[in-house]
Length: 329
Image (cartoon, rainbow, N blue to C red):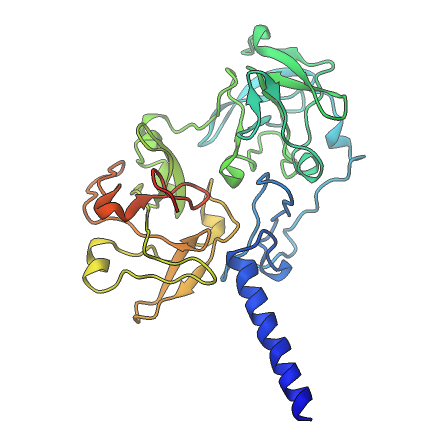
């Protein structure tokens, strides 16, 4: 009996360790912690993977990726046109009014698609056959690229074009910002990021969500909070095997912690490792991105400020995937 008890304890301990490492160190989180509608992404960041404590469990809202025989994977583009999507701006749509997207891990010169296998189920490539320029589309920007399977995929401004499996109605832009790598195609082939100057500066458009991203002219794409304030990480914190904040007391007065934000209230943030944790100093729960605790900076007085960047060689702005801006991990 003693041996059996010890064996059971070892099994339980191993299971606990595996749960932690899966959430904050591995690519495949437990299925029970996946968000509603999250799709698995083996082999690439083509979608968002839920791994966080407090994330909604996959339920009635979850949608399975279409099979290769699904009509959405082979529908011709037809006559392309330009539509205006709320908070996104002008986007390219196909003959059915479905939004077309581009993938940051693809290339435009030369055009090359890096979305295959399961990725192409979630993001069906748009066939080049029968695609034609409609009103607002420059015919000279349309082209094609030969995929690994020999099929021809439409390109816009050199970028391979895709649809998103969760866009089911004309005008949907549910794929915008997914994984910090997928964006609707603007008519010139660039990313449709909308919101105008106010959004670029981290103003009202960015502040409508609990966490979102903006393009800083010096730092690139960074995370901002609901008020458009820059979000930071502390290099002395720990993310693995579980989040640990090493900023407390006076430190927290200068670097206020970011309180929990439901993932449904974010845009453009990586879902993998998006979790909250209980602090050990009695300050409650704190949000993480990719398991790393996040903060704002008291020295930032207005949306768009990045005065905390590089402070003390330990504080840095955060990328949508949780990595530091301008510093090694």
